[in-house]
Structure formats: C-alpha cells, structure tokens
Image 1: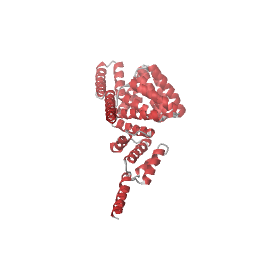
Image 2: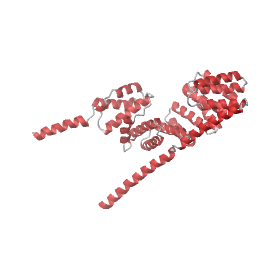
Image 3: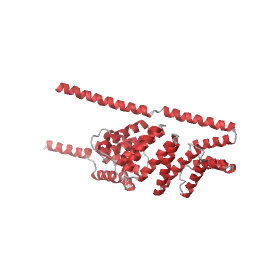
Image 4: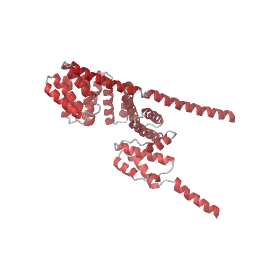
Length: 366
C-alpha cells in the first residue's frame, strides 16, 4: 500500500510538472497554423495563454515560435530575449521538422536584427537555409535571403546585398508572390543605384514602377519614386526628376520621405532659376527632417556651390565628410563577415571535436 501511495504521489507530481495544459497547446497549434491568415485572432489567443501552463522544452519552444510569428504578422517588432532564447536553444539542435526549425530561426534572426546583433542574425539565417535544403519553402527562403540582403546593405556591403536580393526575388517568383517580388525588385534597383550602376538600377526600378502601379501598391511605389529621383539628381537629369516628382501626386503616394521630396523640389526649382521657391522647399525640408539628413545637407551644398557661396559650401561639405567618415568607421568596427566566419569556424571546430570523440569511442569498442 505504501508503494502504491508513493507511486500515486509521483504520478500526480509528474502530471503537474511534466504536462502542459491541453487547451493552451491547442491554441499554440492554432497560432502556428493560422497566424498569417488571421493575425489579430492569433495574437489574442497566444497572449491569453498562461505561460506557466506550457511545460517541457519542446512545448515552450513552440509557444515562443507561435508568439514570435503572431507579433510578426501583426507588424509588431520584438527584441525580447526571454521569448526567443528557449526557442533558439531548442531549434538550433533539432534534427527533424526542418520547416518549423527554419521558421524559428528566421524569427530569431529578425529579433537579432532589431538588436543590431548582425553576426548572430546571419548565423541563424544560414542555419535556417540549411533546414530548407531538406524541407523546402519558397516564401520562407525568399524572406531569409531578403533579410540577409538588408543586413549586408545596412553594413555597407552592397555587392553581398545585391546577390541576396536577387536570390530572394527568384524564390518569391517561384512562390508566385508578386507583392514580395515587387518590394525586392525595388531593393535590387535601389542597391544598384547606391553602387553607381545607374543604368541597371533604373531598369529594375522602372520595371518595379510598372508592377507597383498594376498592384496599386502605393507604399512601394513611393519608395521606387524616391530611388529614381536620387538617380536623376545624381546624374543631373532634372527633367526626368521633375516628371517623377509629379507622379507622387498623380498616384497619391507621397507616403514617406517628405523631407527628401522637398529637397528634390528645391533642386529642381533652383535648376529652373526659381530661387524663392527653392528656398521655401529647403525651409520645409528643414522643418521635416529626420535624424538621417544626408540628402538635405547635400541639397544645401549643391545650392551653395551653384550660388558661388564657396565658404558655405565648404562648411557643409566638411560636415558631410565627417559624418560619412563616422559611418564608415562604424561599419569597419562591426565587420560582420569576419564575425560570421569566426562563428562558422567555431561551429566547425565543435563538429570536428565531436567526430574525434566518436572515432576514439569506436577505436576503444572495436
């Protein structure tokens, strides 16, 4: 009887500690299967779960993945290590269910990007892509490559960025996702412009503009027009820039870059000798400027130089050079490729060490 009583107590303890609430697990399953189609409902469901009712590494990892995806599909950024740490620890070592593993690693990468921990994000993307080699998902592979491209672009590695964006578009095309293909096409064109490959960049952007109009995607169209204006200003194609600026109003898509828009207008007005209008646009741009005021400073420099106000032009130019040097030094101080190589080398060393132990064991046994 005492043994039976003890067994009963142990069984009850196991049920309390080792088992998760069935309803909670069903909600996790619902979110994992429906977050993309029903983001609001998914977020409400996952937020209503008592985290303490989720037990076991497997269930806690799936809960974290479900919560991350619910936030993602509701366009809510997260940088909660407490949320993703158990997810990463579980999925990084998972040898089956590769699609779920890739989804988890993608969510982890997004959070690392938000925290500006780019090497960790790239490592997670690399691992996710390995899983997709086993269990393919064109859309997810496209998202991984696009995020990879954005990391490279942020860290001033445009060649790597362009390669990743081109791969992303290829998989979005395979998945028949025109909106994703459009946005990535815009990124390809913008990156080419950044690399001074103007003809190629303009070709991609014009193709993207046609697609954006057919899809009535005003947000991406706004980005496309902005990149085209930069190209035209840099190449002194002022008439093309003026025509492009008019499209903002034709398609009612001035949805961002308001300060930059007025900088473009100021340059065009100055080119047409409408100096008063030029100064008015500069004043508006200054009142709207964001912390990234690169174009505004460049516009002031161009106008000062054209007005033969060389002292002011020199001051503005010196300030621009100082900021550019700071950006370059910051990029150099965070060499993501070197850090990524270090991570991969350590991973390889660990794998070689494990293989060495296996060989030693086999030698002893056989």
